[in-house]
Image (cartoon, rainbow, N blue to C red; front, side):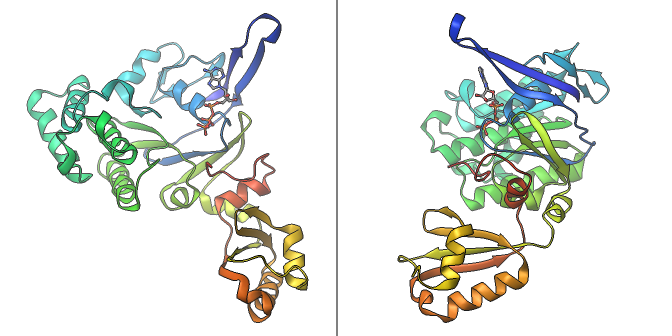
Amino acid sequence: MRGLTRTYRTGRRRDRHVVTANDTIDLDVRRGEIFGLLGPNGAGKSTLVRQLTGLLRPDSGSIDLLGHDLVRRPDVAARLVAYLGQESGALDELTVALAIETTARLRALDAHRARAERDAVLDELELGPIADRPLKKLSGGQRRLACVATALVGDRPVLVLDEPTTGMDPVARRAVWAAVDRRRADSGATVLLVTHNVIEAETVLDRVAVLDEGRVIACDTPGGLKAMVGDEVRLDLVWRADPPMDDPAVGMLARSAVRTGRRWSTRMEPGMARELLASVTSGPAFEALDDFTLSTPSLEDVYLALGGRHQGLVKG
Ligand SMILES: Nc1ncnc2c1ncn2[C@@H]1O[C@H](COP(=O)(O)OP(=O)(O)OP(=O)(O)O)[C@@H](O)[C@H]1O
């Protein structure tokens, strides 16, 4: 995509204002790669993927999808892209098995193949036990998994998945990532993934673009992005009780840490981190400490180091 710009107009008359959701975005996603879009709420990720699925028209710019001009022919996306949006909507009344089979039929599979693919994906995602239940009567995570299953049938060359694993337990998440990876390995599918889960993103993505306020602020492999943060490490302390602020190490950390509930997170150079951790764990502060970790930077640190507005990428 080149120069992709999309605005929304909201409000009426005097209150009317324009939100620039995507601002001259240039990105190349290679065939067969698992490409991630990462960014805080409202960064413009869903707006971007909805244009790539032909559901939303850009104000300006171009999109080339496997050689097709998607701005001129948005209908082409319906044949090439399997899109998993944030909501299940239209499928809610159907049972899991029927939702999958119907999607397969809509993707032009004959009845026999649609049933075979349905059974294979039910098995692959371990959905057998809930196959006969309507989507609307499932838990959030189960419903999401069923929707992923519908996205996977029909062998589409491009999968666009908007936060596919939201609400899922770890077993279901692993099954999803394994299934996505299999599509890429077996049929060379290209996968575009919107995610807030930085830990998952690091393990599954080939490359990732970080979006902030409608713009791409970085694009590289997860390793390449992390190298941008330099050799800083991250020190996380989780307190079970109020930490002793008169402890010099605690006082120093208190000034620089990002606090999330009982967790304090700080990035610093490795020698300093080791020293502070040794001091905190050998002094009186240790009694108040529940857990501590010293780790290499995550993609979340990358985002913060790049100057993103928000405190983190993970949804609250
Ligand atoms: N239909 C709409 N009408 C008006 N403004 C919109 C509309 N959809 C999105 N926006 C605005 O456009 C911006 C980008 O929204 P978008 O949904 O693309 O972000 P996102 O990165 O997908 O966010 P999230 O992580 O919360 O899903 C936000 O400021 C949002 O409020």
